[in-house]
Image (cartoon, rainbow over all chains, first blue to last red; front, side, top):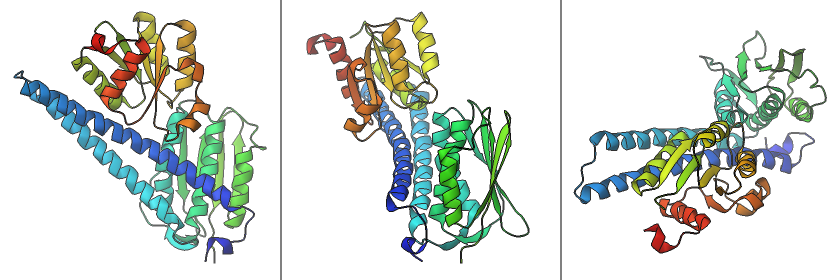
Length: 224
Length: 128
């Protein structure tokens, strides 16, 4: 099935805007990694120049820079792995995939948005495959609207949790959002999430405990 | 250049600490802070000539920190560093009048030193 065959009221610009925001965020993060590797490599050059001039340089200094380059290289590889998985989520509009894997990957991508708001976003690990037939791209677009909503209503240092609840029928994705704001009914993000959930045939429930937390839970149904 | 003191603010700790080491090898006194609040606290105790701040940071953003610094310490020069690929677009995100120089990440250490020299109006001879 192609994207145009999935009936919905979103036009291409909505999807492009979402794709652009995610890739811009990832490229910023990669830019930081490259900057650190670049400056660390420069620092090694600085130390080598000192050695060439006949002055000693402590081995620990060189080891520290080497470790930093290794650490940042691994960080870069992980960011690229996440980006690659996200980019391939548009390969098939509707496909069978591991819901836990896609959700975990996307929550990791969104962690930078949470960090910028001084909050934490955590995926509660699931130790088994949860296969579902749906649109991985639209699902992530829906998750992103909830993440944005969560970051708007939560407070500094809050821990937003995303978990997958296994039920006898369809699996559910649940966001637990600590909040001091109880008036979220008119939130634009939630309206967008509701629209996307309809396209994906998800049912969505919101449970608000004023001044404490908001729980957004949606059941993922198979698209056939 | 030897008498100038620089404060670097970026939430990427390994970036600012490496830059501090490289500036110090070149005889420039520098300190690193990873958020705006700590940077403002540090500025209460130490007089800086130049602040090098990242555009996007958790908590107080680069433009917010810069605005406070310019209000409290109008003589301090500001170099903004950004990972945004499009300068024209990032200009909408920062207070243009309060920025003395902008550097796009990643940058060469010489470009940073040149930017510091320019904002302090130091000639090539003085840099040596």
